[in-house]
Image (cartoon, rainbow, N blue to C red; front, side, top):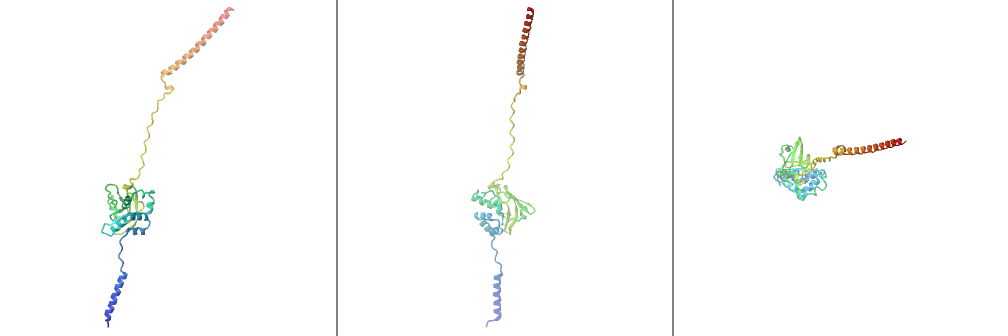
Amino acid sequence: MANPTIHFFSILFLLQTISAQTIAPAPAGPTNITKVLEKAGQFTTFMKLLKATQVADRINSQLNNSNPGVTIFAPTDNAFATLKSGTLNSISTQDQLQLVQYHILPTLYTISQFQTASNPLHTQAGSSDDGQYPLNVTTSGNQVNVTTGVVDTTVSNTIYSDNQLAVYQVDQVLLPLALFGAPPTAAPAEAPAPSKPEKNVRAASDAPSGSSDSSTDASSAVAVKGYTVKGALVVAVITAMMMSVSWL
């Protein structure tokens, strides 16, 4: 006959083993950037770009290996909707990859760490030393402002944050100088055209004195001739009258 004490402890050990297997928490799965964005919603376009360029796979691989963390600025669907029509299609596949990587910092930044960050920040799109991919941040209290040289925006929300990954919502797509250039500046006002010098038109009163005198002399001569003819006629009439009287 079996020892009841041994049988009791055997049953107790079995129950403890079953209980431990039932209530033990499952190990946490690896962080997945796509799942983070899906859960947050309103990031469909950015997720498509992450998948199409295979950047999502690279991020997930980095997060599950020893690394200093990753920071992502995630533009909303509305942010992409405000872009000029055809903007994404106007750039090559390689440029789309650079655009996506420009939104990713290969270092983990909390909101408070942005206050002491050195500008320009280094992005996965490449070095900012050549001035092609500069990304600058400034802070005012808890507000983080992001400047690319083409657009200015702010971090409007923290989507996800742990000791490896920080995802921040931005309401504009971060357009780098290397792909989109500087925003157009207002053209300087054109200087008024120099006024053309006015032609010197001599008025009749400004005519040379010789011309004026000639006209005056000619008029006077005509007048004198007129009076001379009239005087001669008067003298002839008077003479004729006197002769008539003498004959009488």
